[in-house]
Length: 127
Image 1 (cartoon, rainbow, N blue to C red):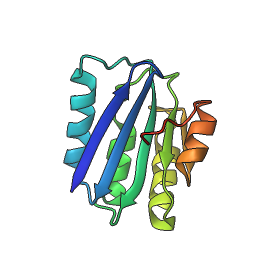
Image 2 (image 1 turned 90 degrees about the vertical axis):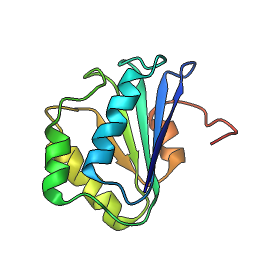
Image 3 (image 1 turned 30 degrees about the vertical axis):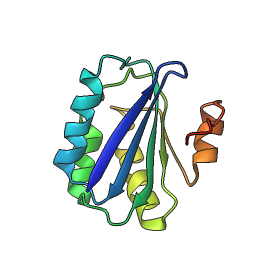
Image 4 (image 1 turned 180 degrees about the vertical axis):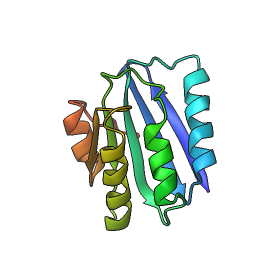
């Protein structure tokens, strides 16, 4: 299990990284940690990096519950999910469809390069 985040104030970006298998509770808990971080601004964009996830630890019902939760970001914030593996990509697309009312600006892509391109950001040397 593993989930972490980094806030880049200069680029107005939160990068959330999931590894291995993550539970619904872990994902909810991470959102609370991000929201309470002193550098967090709800108007920032977000990249959710799922490249290191090996197994989906959330059921389809869990994806629905997560998708219907009120987001911590402003409705205009962009959220880009990076999901290179087919099964993760499929779950992310399902979440995107279910969250269209609560988190309307979700895009699912296969690579970090695509994520940065969508957000019109340069990829830094540390990523």
